[in-house]
Amino acid sequence: MKVKNQYTKILWLGLILFSLTGILITSAEEQPTVKSNEQEAQMVTGPLTVTVILERVYLDGEVSEEIIEETIWSMEDFWAAYDSWQLIDQDEQLIVFQKQIDDISPLLKANGYFGLTSNGTLTIFNGKPDAENVIQSFFQIDVSKLESRKHEELKKGIPIRSKDNYVEVLEVFKPFSMSP
Image (cartoon, rainbow, N blue to C red):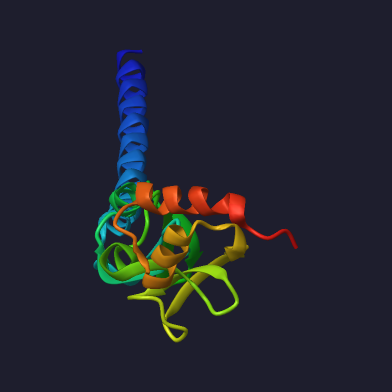
């Protein structure tokens, strides 16, 4: 009986060892797959380089464009850098953002003048009023209702130096616009 008990114990130990060996072998076979997946997840193919166009749209209708070659290391960081911009267009190599600027354009600040065209339309010119340098036209003015001093100012050109100045001139001359 003692021999039979030892035989049973050996048999059970053998089965346990056999099962453990099977588990270890199975585990070892699965391990490279797990490592392979981890390696794939950590593998970086390199940064992505795209062309970014930043469009600024000013109150006076002027649109400026800035073109940047951007190297993207992290998409999260990239989108965070442009979170105040509106996405307009995107493909694999080009991303276009736009922002409305609550100011007049640098062009107007540097060289913009309000004046009149030959038909009496209130217009912004690039430099002193000249038919060839029109930037933007607004509305036709009834010049017969204007004070002569205001009429002369418009003939010579009223320089635009700030957003406030831009808005003020439009408001001053709006009551003199001719109804269509």
